Each structure stands twice: as C-alpha cells, then as structure tokens.
Length: 121
Image (cartoon, rainbow, N blue to C red; front, top):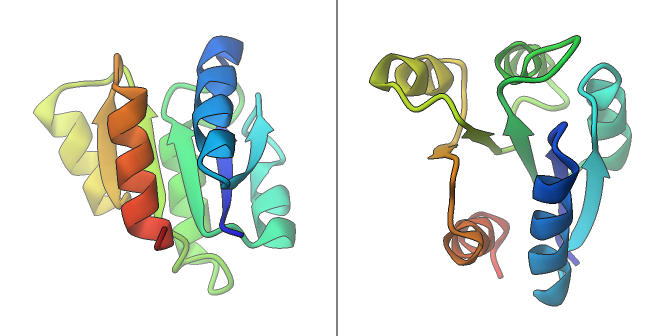
C-alpha cells in the first residue's frame, strides 16, 4: 500500500485530503505542524509528501529544503499545496525541489489523480 504524509495547519484541508486518499486505498499520515515533520518523514519513509507552504514554526519551503538536503529523503516527491499563487512563488518552490506546485483552492479529485500518478496506483 502506498503511503502519503500530508502536512497542513488547516484541519479541514487535512480531513478532506485524508478522506479522499483513504477511499483510494492509500495509507495517509496527517500532521498539523511542521516542526517535527522531518523526523516523521524519515521514520515512515512515505512515497509522497503533500506540504503546505505557510506553516507556523517551519515553513513548507524550509521543510522542503531540509528534506532535499538529507540523502535519505531527497528522492521523496513533494507536492506543495499552498495559497501562494504568484509565479515567483511557484518558481521558488520548483527550485527547492517541489515535484508539483498546487494552489488553493484545489480540486480534491485532481489532487488524487496527481497522487496516483506519482505513487503508481
């Protein structure tokens, strides 16, 4: 079974994504804060991380940079799911190693299709 970690400080977003992925038989771990996320990602070895940019403590972009510097985690695909919709924001995300840049509001169905492309479902 594929495993996805979703990190977002908005409970509704987490619940919506978790529901959609679980119905597609994808194992989901949700986190409401990014502070200890790298430790969880290292331990769980997910097939994909879905990450919000604007998080308290450690921003999603900083977490992405951290993950891409770690040889054990650098190959994990990352989707940035964010309200930051400017071209410059997207370019920064892609330069930091984001696989897909998705702006909010988003289509849960389209997100599921992107997840399935990446995790091989």
